[in-house]
Image 1 (cartoon, rainbow, N blue to C red):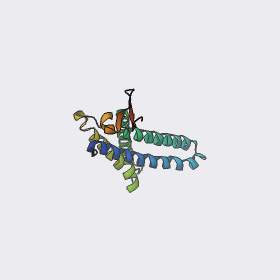
Image 2: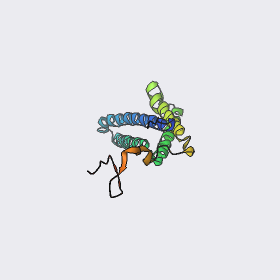
Image 3: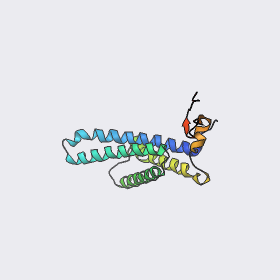
Image 4: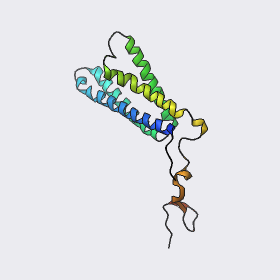
Length: 158
């Protein structure tokens, strides 16, 4: 039975890929702060917090792809917090959003993730995002002869 993936689950998968890209960039930023932590103890804390945030984002992206609702809520919260912090830092006269890379990492990617997650949630009242277990397995699940339990790819006992 051929099934085409729905737009809702496709948007969530694209959002999870963007979160993995964002987490990868955060991990690189955290690891590159470690040499400066030798001289300045404040950078140790920033490096560890950035690396832990990147690990949490990898974990949330994985759970988003698995269809966990709590991961969706946590990612929306993290991205909105990131956008709020970017807006606050851009109001300060220190030049935080100068150039295309900070603009992309701090503004465009979080906005795209929020929009994609909102699009993936837009039609969940009409039905579940993933098909039911019996629909996925289809004819491959057969009753094992004699005991009444279903086994995937069961063969005839003879």
